[in-house]
Image (cartoon, rainbow, N blue to C red; front, side, top):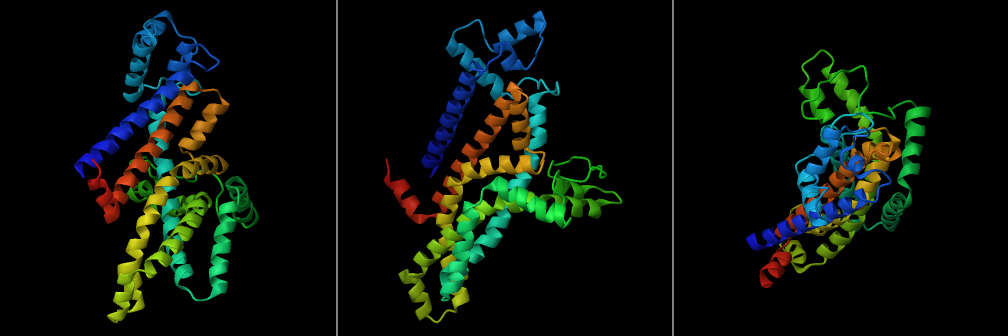
Length: 343
C-alpha cells in the first residue's frame, strides 16, 4: 500500500507541474506586458520592475524562468489584482470556503437523495416506478444547468418569493468570518440574531445547491441502480437469503456497501464536469466563490486572478480525483489484489 500511495503522490506532483507549465506558457501569450501579467501592477516603478525581474528570473533562460515561476506560485505569490489592488492570494483564500461549502451541500444532497432512489429502482418490481425514476434522471442529466438555475430562480425566487436568488447571506447580518463556511460561522456567532442568520444562510444556499446537485444526483441514481442489480445477483446474497436474513438486513449490511464501491470511482470521474457546473451556478446565483471570482477576473482581464483561479480549481480537481481513487482502491479488495500483483 505504501508503494501505491507513493505512486499516487508522484502522479499528483507530476500533474501539478504540468498544470503550472501550462499556466507559465499562458502568461507569455496574454496580450499584455509580461511584468503586468506576472505581478498585476499596471504602472510599476523602476524598483517594482526590478523586483519582478528578480522574483521571476526574467533575465535568465526559459528553464530558470519556469523554476522561478513555479516557486513563486507554490509559495502563494500570485501578485495583486488589478481590479481591487489587493493580494490575489488573500482574495483566493477568501472565496475558497464558499465554493467548498456549496460543493459539500450539493454533493450531500445528491447522495442522500440519489442512493435511496437508485436502490428503490433496482429492487422495485414495478416497471412503472423504475421507468419513472430513470426517466427523471435522464431528464435531469439533459437539462442545461444555466437554464435550470434561471428557471428555479424565476419560480421560487421571483414568482413565489420563497427563496433568495443571490448572495450567501442577507447583508443586514454582520457575521464575522471564522471558518469561512457561513453555515458554521452563523452557528459560532454569539449574538442576538444567530439563529435567524443561520436560517437566512440556509435559505440562500437552497437554490444554488439544488441546481448544482442535479448532475451528481442523476449519476448517483444510475450507478447505484446498476451496481445494486449486479450485487443482488451474487452468490453471497443468495446465501444470505438462504440463511433467512431479512431483505432489509441483506440490502443494508451486505448489498449496499458493495454497491457503493463503484459509485465512489464514478464520483472521482465526475469532478471535472461538477467543477464546471459549479462555476456556472456561482455566476447565476452571485455566489461569492472561486467560480464567480474567476469569471469576474476574465471579464475584467485581471490576468493574475485568472491564473490563480485556474490554478486553484484545477489543483482541487487533481487532488480530490487522486484522493477518491486511493479511497476506492482501499475499499475494493479486487483493486488491492491487482495493486499488489503489479511490480
